[in-house]
Image 1 (cartoon, rainbow, N blue to C red):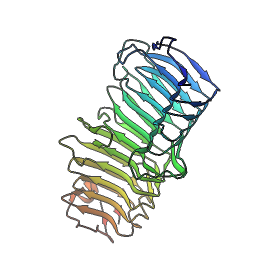
Image 2: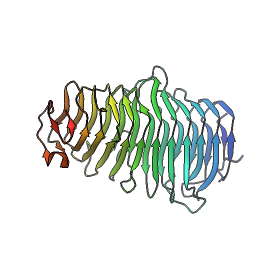
Image 3: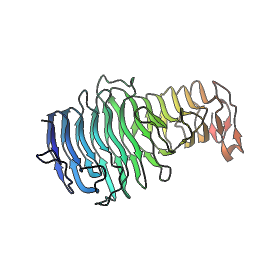
Image 4: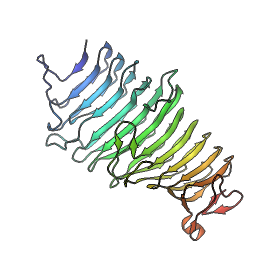
Length: 358
């Protein structure tokens, strides 16, 4: 069949549905989508109150679960196994109109297990999300790449959050990304997120990825954001990546990307722990005791700006802090002012600056 469960009548017309319950089904062997809740157009009034839970969805051509055109649902405890050629496991898309319908106060996507195939964009993807006033909580999910998947093409992501607008507050909490299986291009990829209510990424683990957590202005799929972005990252454990955390404004024509990295975020076993790249990139890196260690380079500031306070950077083998291409490091009040010009290719080892152990 083309699609398994959808809000579409026999004539092929989409219709709106509130409070649908789709529970405990085995959905498999279909050409496109397993569960699709979609309103007629991207300007349709919002629908809500639905629950998609406890389903096993596998062997599909496009998407396991799709919510579109201002159709909102909680998505919990599903198992989604993507097949070659599919594009997303769980996807909310094209909901850019605040609408006048039933607005949920919060949306819960939790305890899902998603296995991602090669070049499939994302296991969990939220794109163009702008309800009138909603918090979307994506928490306690497990997302792994299938065996043999590699991140070489930069189109295989674990969790992908793009174009969140308005008063929406996205929270990613205690998700496990890349604990087994193949390699992601990006474990958690973030783009075009509001600065008024910064996205939070808290707890959980990220591994088996070329880039662990990335906030970037120039997205491989969408291009330049056209707006500033901000993210708060706290208490996440990142290991086994080429870059643990990437704050990337390279190519920006004026948009800024800013990230706060705090709360004992642990970054181990990466080539570069944190990379701040491009003139319009900035990071505040503070209060990560004994946590940014055993990388080749702890923090690489390449043209960007970083405030670095109260971190343990002692066990990075090449440099605790490396500054390149006009990058600026500020140790703040702990060191009584700026720390700049730390050298190209190596950081200040054997000293303490800004409360950092180096």
